[in-house]
Image (cartoon, rainbow, N blue to C red; front, side, top):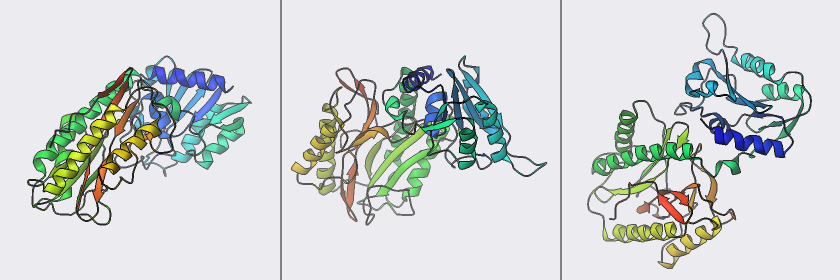
Length: 373
């Protein structure tokens, strides 16, 4: 598992003259090892620090809390991987996990000298002291981000499964959205169906908002807001499965949509089709963003206040971002989201979002939750 990712990392570190490195950002750890923690409630409160990956002489060691070892899968059985755990929860003594993770890291850093690449932004001070004592720390924050943009076949398979789960959530939203229920009622039905399908609790984000929310009807957690007869409901879903995230968005109507809602919806349908037609290797992200915004503006609607799209993988939002500033060219093997929208706060809104695999001559649509209005 994740051999391709680790080899790309070896090549990068070799180019930078680094024989040792410490990765502490959760996205890096997941990408390198397949570690897939249950993130719904945040990190484990018995942990002494973030999950870590120590790299030395071509070998990777994953350091995690003992009760989180089950989320590491078979990484410890890999020829280039070792799983190292430390104790957290205890009855016999106070919780001393910060000391235990420091001790575990100390056994790895050893007494060798020389530079150590370190993801410093996500590393607690008490662990940085261990690294500093073992060598000369060199910041490598963000170095893996460009490598993560092009997905391996293994990653694409995990993303396909995630998109299947979010597509299921949208099918539930389509039959649940009706007058008298609330945003949270629809969300609860969606999450329940996804959990039953997966057979375990699946972390679920993002938005479930009625169009009449004011001042922000772009996104947000579901609330105790009623779905009225003329309500448009934006449902934006991301599931976390196998350490990877999906994304998706559709709009549902409690009853027959109004003429204004139909007009807005059809413009965004056309915009999304146009956006997909622009996707091919070599096209700069900013060109896609500019053309899609212009498409909406020429039809007389306000331009959406967010990105046109973004990459998806071990994080629900990652590079490449489809934004006005980003010159990054699209590449075959990237998995991206496209999500144009139109918003009239306090009245109605519409956003549609598909997931796409960039292919050698265009794009494959990975989501199937959007039907023509």
